[in-house]
Length: 208
Image (cartoon, rainbow, N blue to C red):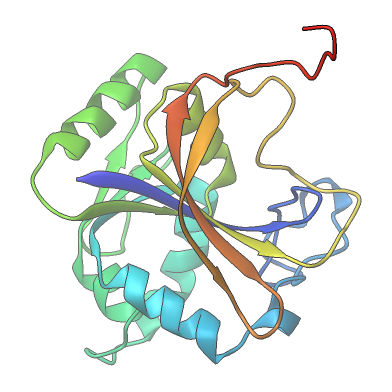
């Protein structure tokens, strides 16, 4: 399976609590829900299209808890998001979750090397996509170990000036190729990138 990562991000790189004030108020974050005013029909179509390509989900503990509190209550078998989330395998990376109640959930834990090995096994299975949604802490872990095959970044026209960022200082230098780009009527840029390795460098030195 191809491991794809989808997240909502501001112009200044913040990924914290896009969906509501109570989603993640950690650190006294006062801007929760910044994504909501930009929602539109085009965004819904993109979400539907991508969820249709999922064969399994890989989630961090915080995102898993948010999803598990909501999506099992949506029982429409034809719902484009609830149906795959409720029916497909879900793998949650956690050192504390012991007895998940959401059906089709498997907990991945242990040392970092064990987690990486289990995710690599999942990627080697036949199928479409192993999808990561949100899960910023997990995403940074996956980035550090070169496990993400495609990044789907929804960049919103808003600057917050504070909050958890996806590409924090110390992230591994990486170059990307643009695989797809779309824009919604509300001004959200939806870009898909595939990592291509280390950045290449040059110079505009006129004497060179």
